[in-house]
Amino acid sequence: MPYSPLLTRLIDALRCMPGVGQKSAQRIAFHLLERDRAGASSLSSALADAVAGIGHCERCRMLTEDRICSICAAQGRDDGQLCAVESPADVMALEEATGYRGCYFVLMGHLSPLDGIGPEELGLEILERRLSEGEINELIIATNPTVEGDATAHYLADLAGRHGVQASRIAHGVPLGGELEYVDGGTLSHAFYGRRAVEQG
Amino acid sequence: MPYSPLLTRLIDALRCMPGVGQKSAQRIAFHLLERDRAGASSLSSALADAVAGIGHCERCRMLTEDRICSICAAQGRDDGQLCAVESPADVMALEEATGYRGCYFVLMGHLSPLDGIGPEELGLEILERRLSEGEINELIIATNPTVEGDATAHYLADLAGRHGVQASRIAHGVPLGGELEYVDGGTLSHAFYGRRAVEQG
Image 1 (tube, rainbow over the protein chains, first blue to last red):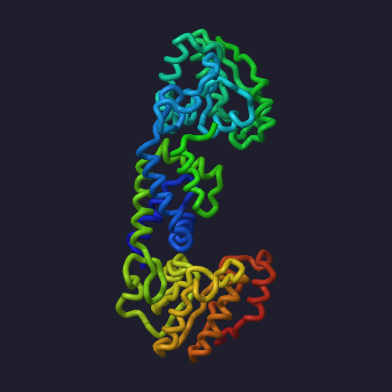
Image 2 (cartoon, each protein chain N blue to C red):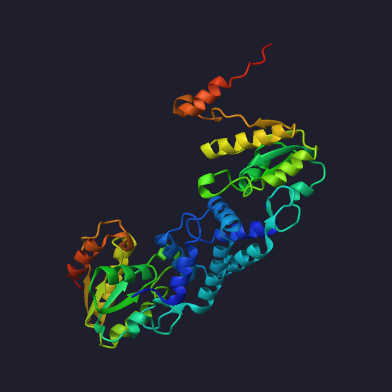
C-alpha cells in the first residue's frame, strides 16, 4: 500500500536535492506537511522565482538575477586582479576573510572529464575573452586544493600564460583535501596573501 | 557583499527543512540552479500542490489528499484491530514487513509536553471516538521504543482501558541478525525478562 499520489510525488521531487535519499525525503515531507506548511509554501515560491529569475553574471558567471552581479558592478574594485573560484560560496568566504578588492571569476565547478565537465561547462571562453582584453594583470587561482581543483588550476595557469597574464595560486596553508568554504577565516586569509607565482612553461 | 536577493531568499527558504543549515542550504541552492533546474521546478510545483491538496485521513490521520486514505477505504481489512504508530513511514514499514490486515491510527508524532505536543495535537479525540464506538477489539501500540514513545504508549493503553478495549504493544527484544554482545543493555534486559516458553516436541 503506497503513499497517496501527491505525497509520493512530493517525496520523489525532494530527492532531486544532493544528499537526500528516500528516508530523508520522507522525513522532510512529513515535517513540512505536519509542522511547517508556511515554510513549504515559501520554499515552493522561492524555488519557482529562483529558477525563473536567477542566471549568471555576464562578466564573472556568479549566480544572480541581474545582468551584472553586485561585485562586478561595484565602483572602486580593481579590474586588474581576477580571482577564479569554484563556487559562489567561495566568493563569500573570500570577501569575508580577506580585504581583496579585485574581481572574481566563478567557474561553478571544476574540470572533471569523467563527469562531462570540460572548459566549456566552466565558461572558460568568457574567461579567455577577458584575459585577452589586456585589462587583467593577475589571475589569482583559488580553486579547491583537491585533485580536480589542482588540474583546473594548471589549466587556468596555462590559459593565463598564453595571454601574457601573470597567474598566482593561493598558498597551500589551506589543508589538503579540504574545501574552501569550510576553512576558518584566518587560515583562508593567510593562504590568500601567501599566494605564489605559478611557473609557466 | 551578500548573495543577490533572490538567491538569499532561496537559501533562507531551504532552511525550513529539518537538518538543513546555512551551508547545506547553499550547497543545495547551487546544485539546483547549476545542475538541476528541472528538478527544482518539479519540487516547487510538488510542494505547492502538496500544501494545497494534502490533509489528514478523517479516520486515521494518515497524510492523504483524499477524505479517507487508501488503507481505511480498502475492502476486506479488519476493522476490529487498530495499530497506533507515530508516522506514515511506520505504516509503510509494517505493511511491507508484516501480513497485518487491520487498520492504523497515525499519531503524527508523540506526546512531548515540553514541545507543546499534547493529546489534542496527536488527534487523540478522534482515536477516543473510534474506541468508544465499540467496533475495535484490540489496540496494537507500535510507538517507537524511546522515552516519549513509551510515555505515549502508556497514555494510549490507559485510553483503551477506559473504553474496555484490549491494548497490546509490539515486542521489544534483540533484533534478528544482531549479535547479543553488541546489543545495548536496555534492549537485552527487555529481551531477557520478556522471554517466552519454547514449544517442544
